[in-house]
Amino acid sequence: MHIERKSGVKYVDEFRDKGLVRQIAARIGAMMPAKKNNIMEVCGTHTQSFFRFGLDKLLPPNLRLIAGPGCPVCVSSQGYIDQAIALAKDKGNIILTFADMLRVPGTKSTLEKERARGSRIQAAYSALDSLAVARMNRAKRIIFLAVGFETTAPTIALSIIAAKKEKLKNLYFFSSLKLIPPAMDYLLKDKRLNINGFLCPGHVSVIIGSQAYEQISKRYGIGCCVAGFEPLDILEGIEVLLKQIAQARPAVANQYLRAVKRQGNPRARKVISEVFQVSNASWRGLGNIARSGLKIKDKYSRFDAEEAFSFKITVDDQRLTTKCRCGDVLKGLISPADCPLFLKACQPDNPVGPCMVSSEGACNAYYKYH
Amino acid sequence: MKIRRIQGDFAEVQVGRLRRQINIQMLPKARIGDYVIVHAGFAIQKLDPEGARETLKLIHAPRPS
Image 1: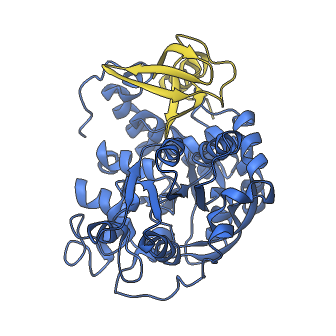
Image 2: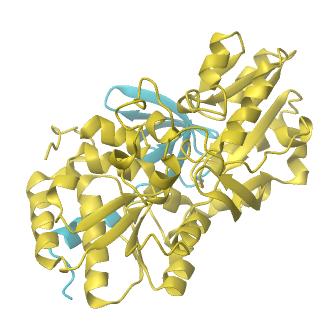
């Protein structure tokens, strides 16, 4: 266990207490049912924290924590990257994106390679940065790659609303925003997976609330526990799920009480529905999932890159261009180490699949901490 | 991150020596001194001290089953 030194940050140190971490780990060991159990976390930050704090070494061997499709960069479809690259090749365009998108492989290239070849592609910290870039480059078209889940969606929505208010004419958003509960529903339909409980994402749930999992929990009879990102949060979430499994009483639970309310953040949900409508979306590795994405509403279509540049993202992701098994990793069917490319052809310096690119990706976390 | 100053839709937040301008439109009730969760330049929620205490209590003494 490598719990780090005190950070001096409120709401962090309390949830990294070494003694308590050991106590919960012991309780988990004592209550662990004899049979094998699989808990899936659908959140890249959980994946990262889990290995970073060495929690994998504290859990019983018959408890498997599976990393699900919770890394937004990893699930961006190859078709989406290809379209972004096509847009980047036009000298009149400037592409803005979150930094970890740069190295995600499309079919033939990456945004990083295109930048080296002369395309204008810039990393942004926030969607709001795109407004400043648009103001400073009036003669160019600025295209923001809107990638993320429910946590990112309201930040994009508020940026679009601000752009409309400012009457910016050269700013567009290319949405690949995705929704977590429909992906969980999709995974539960896959009989090969055998998931016994979900550790639900902390910051997605800050927005959508723990209520968002109630239908899934009821329909599939599966426990869903919202958890924070510190070691104690994750272990407590696992303890709650195991208790539900032991008592055969699956339900929605919320461990992350300091941040997540049952109804989420109502203001954030309101701005999402002001700007976006639910649409089908293509997930890398999983394929097309009905009603699992967000598309810009007609009211704001002036800012929609898909309208302005008249293309449609193709659903192409079942085609495999290499031996990369990212799709199976994202579904939790295999562990990163089971992929034939892991540590060989595929490393963080030269990633073949998106799970190795992002710091939130399962392969990247495995590489770093194993 | 802790809110230091508020100006319209924006606030200055601080953690350690890092200071940053963030948007607070999603938190109409944000006040100076609040701790907030920040995602991509936006405050998405206020941290609730009562909720934190509740969780720590459950960790110390788990619910009887």
